[in-house]
Amino acid sequence: MARRYFRVVVALCLFAVALLAAACGTDEAPAAPPATVSLASPAKKVNPTDEILVRATGGDLATVTVSNGKGEKVDGVSTEGGAAWHTTEDLGYGAEYTVAADAVNNDGKHTRKTFTVATIDPVDTAYANVVPAPEVVADQGIGVGQPMVFQFTKPVTDRAAVEKRLKVTTTPNQPGAWYWTDNQNVHYRAKDYWKPGTKIHIEANIYGVDLGDGIYGAEDTAVDYTVHDSWVAKADGSTELLTVFHNGEQVKQMPMSLGEPSTPSHVGPHVVSERLDSVVMDSCTFGVCAGDPDYYKETVHKNLRISNDGEFVHAAPWSTGQQGSSNVSHGCVNLSDENAQWMFDHFNIGDVVEITNSGGPELPVWDTYGDWAVPWKTWKAGNADQ
Image (tube, rainbow, N blue to C red; front, side):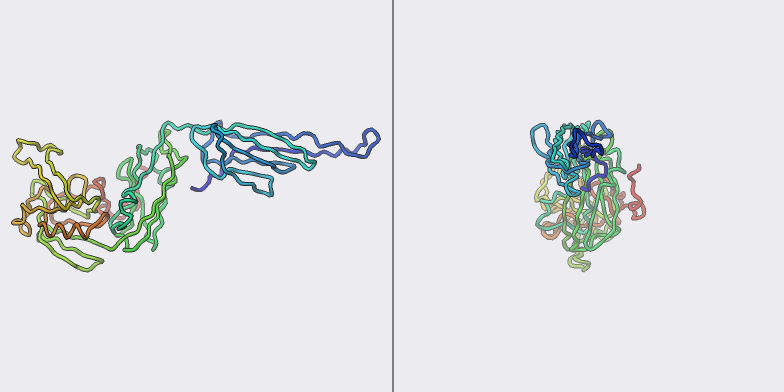
């Protein structure tokens, strides 16, 4: 992360005084007086991202060491022709550092001084995890609908301060904006789906940043993604057909069944967040348990998760008679075994399933990736101050 401008300054002043009057019948000037050393620190405890700067006046620095309580040294570099030295790595939280400086004046006289510098001790620290995890998509990349996501391990109350420390670089350039889905999740997307082949680099430079209420960023995070081919499936409840487009060209159409009137599928763009070969779907997880006429518990195959409230694209051999003609599911996109296998083979994390004419409500922004349902004007304006 960029180093902060504020610095802890250790100043070593070395004075050379020439006396004009002769002493004891000799022309030799007396030796320079001992150097004086002072520490200028405007804060009792400093931020661990602040540099410790050591400076000599009237001479050069021979050696400088900064070490923690374990004796581990902090890296630093000499500057200004040897007259200054500063740390080049961050310090730790809640720690004390010993600064030992040795300066030499023009007469070769050494001045040695030791100081102690303490860093702030946060109430707690929080990480900014990335979703999806890079290792999950390392081989196939991400789909065109995948938002960039930082998921904080603690609530963020100073969103504005944190958002200033987030960075996204896209190649080719596709300007986007951040939007908070809650106090622990912030998403980034462009106006439209990513272009296939886009390289995306994201950073959360939050170390040393107060996230609010005395909780500080535990470490900086940086991740790279690559966008794979465009895969978009359009599920139209008025025709009961799922039409698939690869890089904008229609490649397949298949009959399907969406949610029945009592449990309609959400409308709007959905994004695949998980691929599961088999899932036990149990209605008791949302309160419909054994004894209820609507209770079900089934092992379901070839699942593409498209929302966190239980919507999947999956195999449903029990509803093949209704697929293409009526909505009978509990909110999922039902397909035959063969068609579900085809979708499972071709769709990956970040690919898009757009649902229309289902009779259901819009997918909420907080439900995994309801990002694309938010109008661009609203998204671009952001909500860090809310």
